[in-house]
Image (tube, rainbow, N blue to C red; front, side):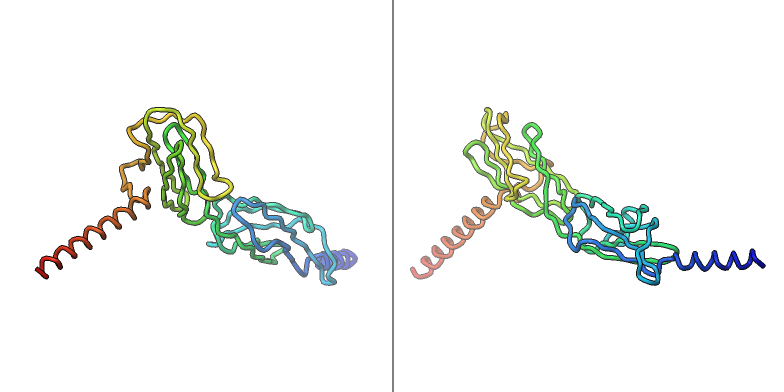
Length: 235
């Protein structure tokens, strides 16, 4: 009988220790590569905080599990977002004694490229979480060119620099603070200053100014032809 009473008291005590509530505190917006800080709290029926370990997992916008671990209730926990973290609402899911609590946070859009120089070739890699569409200004000595290199997420493309044989200072910028680059003593070879897209693809995507020039010239030719035809008809 005493054993039964003792067991009942023990079970009752354990039930009182079971958290009646889980709560997650986290910021609202983060950029890819940021460190997400959050706190998971446990409360009993009287809304008093409890100290115990809590399991949690972090899932992305597509509910794919990115991380899982255990933390102590009330402790500040950190998680570093991948540099190309998928944009949209992510979730922290805490689980304790069969109870579950979910809290959302937003991963912002980031259009970003990593630009490097390897010999005569500029390498552009999309390290953001959306397609990269920024025009890239390239200054070879005193000559300026504009490259438009559209990149899908995680995609890499190369641009070959050409110039008469010599050593040049090459400046590259896509208008962002991270990509305002200067490369000194770059040895180049070629006949004229310009850009060549590796892989032999259409160079017009690298030269929006040239594309515009071709369109304007074509329009002028058509207009002159129209005037000549009209003059002949009037005669």
